[in-house]
Image 1 (cartoon, helix red, strand yellow):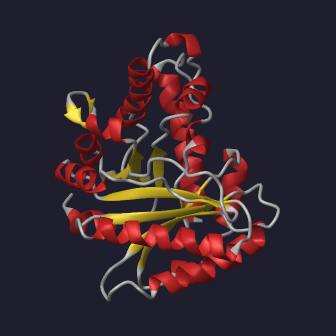
Image 2 (cartoon, rainbow, N blue to C red):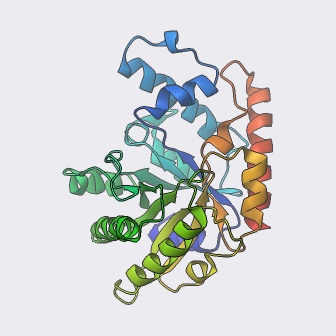
Length: 295
């Protein structure tokens, strides 16, 4: 797949994007969910080796194909690694899956009800390396905890500044201002975020597009103006802490939005499974999320 093929697949593909990008503090939790105890590693390198083994097993699984999984988001170490002797992005592309890279370095402490992204001083170098490996786009996450317009406006401003830097490298930014689904003012957060995103999209030059990765809205169909916006290639949804059945029910209520799930995709997989059990469990999860994405 060349860049034009990848754009076409993401724009119109009947499937979803797998989020395989747990990093830092979320890695031990992901390994625990996979059935790997904390005493299975003695240092960070061994820990990341184990999570890479898990991701490699997912990618090589016969259940994981570009027919239903149209894209996958990678952690930088996963991108730099290999699957069966091939660079991870190459292994994905050969299966018809479009590769993305998580570029944010985590979150700042909360201010004005939000958590901005930490600085990314080496972003240009990471983007250059990623593009050379065949990676199509990026993902950058920040978090909205309460309906503070000043804070939400700052999140969107920062996200689009980073997005424009990504676009300058000929890559597709997946902008992710996550609304915390436990927020007491979640519906108001959705409304303010929609307004701020529409304003920011108007600042993009003609012909440029971004992707949006959003929490599923309280009000079904709330983000339809974004789904239909000419400067948005695709809107995808994070599971945000929902278990898979609930996440799929909520997703199916929102026409035109597809999944980009992490925990909801991986929650039934276990290190101890035989390959046949692993493929069957992963296949069932993929089928359920795919059905909700194309509903």
